[in-house]
Amino acid sequence: MGRPRRACMLRDTEVTMKKAHPVVLAGFRGFCVVVLMMVGLTAVEKAQGQAAPASEGSGRVHGTIANPFPAGHPFAGKMSLTADGKQEYIIPIDASGNFAAEVSPGRYDLSVHLMDNAPGVMEFKNVKGSLVIHAGEDLQLDFDASGKQHEQRAESSAATAPPPPPPAQDQTAPDAGGPGGDTGVIALPKKKEAPADTLPTAPAQPKVKNPEGLSNFSLHVDVTEVTLPVGVLLEKTHTFVPGLKPNNFKVYEDGIEQKVTGFRRTEAPITALMICEFAGSNSYGGYELIRDMRNAAFAFTQQLRPQDYVALMTYDMRTEIRLDFTQDKKELMEAINSLRIGGFSETNLFDALHEGIDRLERIEGRKYIILVGSGRDSMSKLTLDKILKNVKESRDITIYTISTGGFMRAMTEGGMGMRRQMQDIDFLQADNEMRTFANLTGGAAYFPRFQAEYGEDFAQINQNIRAKYELVYHPTNTKLDGTFRKWRVELVDDEGQPLRMEDEKHKPLKYDVVARDGYRAQPPVE
Image 1 (spheres, helix red, strand yellow):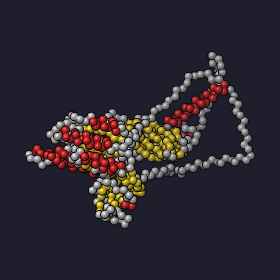
Image 2: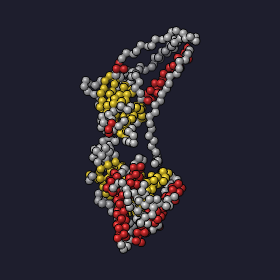
Image 3: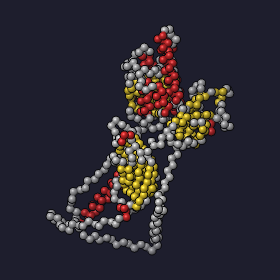
Image 4: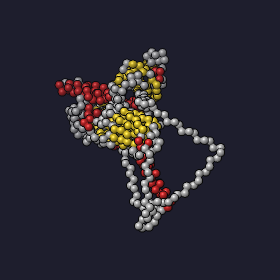
């Protein structure tokens, strides 16, 4: 499935230049052409990061990367060297993990990107670090399977070796006539004498060598930054509460208070995936559920703005992408209108939600899932515990749920017979699951019974999605261990006491602080 603001994965393409066939070059014009071809070949070698012979004033980087993938799967990759935020070199890594390149002296930030090439596998490994290279230095840079960097430095033999003697020129004339291989003596223009007032050239900086047994030391520090979106809604009207300040928020991570370093209120376009239950007729009233789903989907579409990106996915026994991400409301309306007669009667809600989360996590930024359905699951491969864990650990995804079949349930609820009682129990469990999906991600659950309620519910969802407070902090727990860390957010007044809100008649107002349950820390190597 496509996605908005697509980030394309660029593959390195080898650039080769074939040498021209021998030609007869005459005089000074032929000499200029040869020089230009040599300059062009040197520029291509540097752009590709190939290991050209070490030249004076440059250093050489080479080494091996241990295979980080299981069972020794084949892999491919590249190394990027950047200086001052600008990419300088792209060094290819062969299937054995070897790489080599000649680079200019200086300090570089390096990023290693590896991809598992085993059939049917799509796994990536990224390693970050830094290096310092001096002129004439030979730096051996090795990485073990955990991504740890090891350095060995030596003076480059290519830089210290005497230059090779120039090749002998062929003095014999070609059979077809014309000049031989030697173009003869070239007259150079006489250098102009520098004027007397020219300042002398500054002396070259002396090369500093480390004491024996002491290698270069480089320090690379990564500061973790966490962004926490928070919504503050009035309990009675579900409207957003504006006007709050940074000192009104207290953030706790695993029970430890964190210092908020960044604060802003956001109201931006949304990126949302609408997942709709589209199952055929069954004992629970398939026609009524499809009708409610269509009405809810149309109501959501009417709330969209021109800058919003929305995709549509349906599920019964299997999932199906009905519409890729688009900003065209007309396309979305037509896709919803085509949902009339369902196929299978099974509803694999857990599998559909898992697939939706997996697709959205490939998109950067904050995303939303609008889940429209009865909440019942009949034949999913995933269990409830597994999908709850998946929802809890999802990144930058908020789920809003709209339950269907409310009017039908109101008419049949509490009926006589075992079948009616089992139906009531199934729907109560479904409501609890839909409510849990929303609460774990900082969203909200809605249970409309009449068609007129859809517009009001989606108006609240539209306002809650667009209006958020974003709190930024640097966690006191700096370990990159991949553990789940629990959030708790409190509102306080200027004196640090719980914040109290009142209406124009000075009556207290109850409010809800809506935020995710927590987040998972970054693993050591990602």
